Image (cartoon, rainbow, N blue to C red; front, side, top):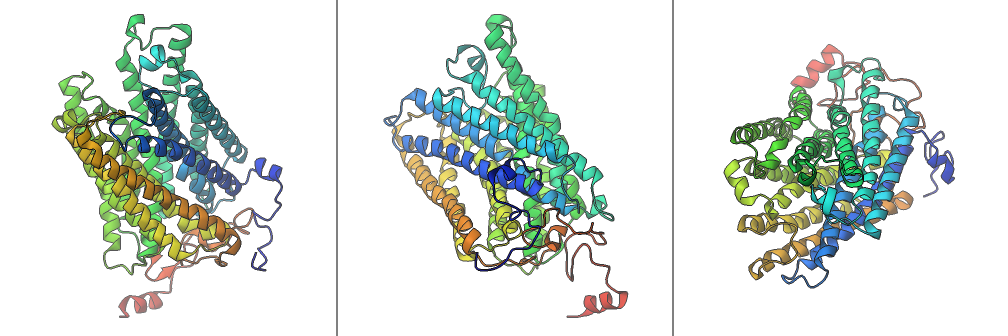
Length: 552
C-alpha cells in the first residue's frame, strides 16, 4: 500500500480474517459492515428501477407484464426505503463517528450494536429472497385490504423481513440515545455537541418511538391474513382506513428518519468548507428536535382523498405547513453560513450544495401537496413521485455521499481523486434533475403513478426521465469505482486533511481501535473556524484573541 506503514493499534490492520470482522464489537468495523451491506441493497433496488424505467420509455407496456411491473416497483420501494434510505447515514456514518465526536471509546452497548447489524442483514436478505422468488405486487405501502386479503404474492414473507429489520432500527436508536446521554467527554456539554450528533439524537427518538407502530401494523396484517382476524378487511368487520392511519403515523416520521441525519452531515460540511462558524447553532439544533416532534402530527396529509373530515384535513394541512418552518430554519442558516465565507468547492461541498438545492425544491413542492385543493388534483400522480424523490434521493443520497466523501480520509487514511469526485457530484446533480423534474410535469398533466401503460402524449417526458436515470446510474457507479481504487492507490490523507475542528479529526487516520489514547477534555464550542481552534484546544489568550479580531 504505497510502502507506507499504517499506525499500530489500527482498527483495520488488527487482523484481516473474516471472523474477526463478523464477531467484532468495534463501532467502526460495524459501520464498515453496514456500508458494504447497504451498497449491495442499493444496487438491488437500483436494478429494479432500471427495468421499470426501460418499460416506461414506450407507452404500450411491451417489455414486462403488468404483474411483473407491479413487483418491480414494489421491490424498488421496499429495498430502497427500509434497507438503504432509512439506515444509510445512521448505521454507517453515525456508527463510525458519533462516539468519536463526543469523545467516547465506543457506543454504550457494543454487542447490541453487532446484533443490530445481524438483524438488519438477516431481515434484508430474507426480504430480497421473498421478493425475487415470488415477488410482492402491493407497492411498498402494503395497502389493505389488498395486502391482507386479496394479494396472492409473498406479502407475509416480505413483511416478516421488514419486521425483523425494524428491531435493528429500534436497537440502534436506543444505543445512540444512551451513548449521547451517558458517554460524552468531560466538557462536552449539550451546546458543545456537533450538529451531526444533535440530528442523530432527534433521529433516534423517532427510531425508538415510531418503528414499533410499523411492527404492530405488519403483525396485524399477518393476523388477518393467516388467522382471519378482522382488523382491516371490511368483509371481516375491519376498516382499511385504520391501516392508512397506522402506516402513515409511522411513515411520515420515517421521512425524517431518512432526511434528519443527512441534515446533520450538511451542517458539518458547510461550515468546514466555508471556513466559518455555523450561523445560528442553537436554532439548527432545536429545529432537529422540532422536526422530530412535529413529524408525528402530520400523517393525515397522506389521506386528503381518503374520506377524512374537512376539519381533520384542514388541521393536517396547517400542521404540514408548520413543519416546513424548522426545515426552512436549517436552509436559511446554511445559506447565512455560506455568506461571505471562504468557500472551497471540494467534492463534499458540491454534494452538500446539491443537497440544499434538491431538498429545497422537494420541500417547496411538499407545500403544494399540503394544500387541499392542489393535492386533490395531483394525489397519486407522478407529482408525488417527483416530490418524494427530491426529498429522499436528492436530499438523503446527496447527504450520504457528502458524508462518505467528507469522512472517507478519516475512515481509510486515504484520499480519493478529487477531480473524479467533483465530476461525479455534478453528473449526479444533472442526472437527478433530468430524471425527476419531468415527473413533476407528468403529474401535473395527470399521469398516475404505478401504471406502465400511458397515453402517447406522455412519452417525451418519460423518455427524458429514463435518459436522466441512465446518467444518474453512471453517476452512482463512478464513486464506487474510485473509492475502492483509493483504498490501495490513494494518497495518504493525514489526520485532518480538511482542517476541521471536531474531535474525530484529532485522531490518526484511520482511527485507533479505541479512538483516543486518553479521554479528551473539551474546552471549545464546535465550528471555531475564525480563528481555527479545535474543540480540545485551550481558549486563546485575551491579548491574542483581541489582536486576531482587529487584524485585517
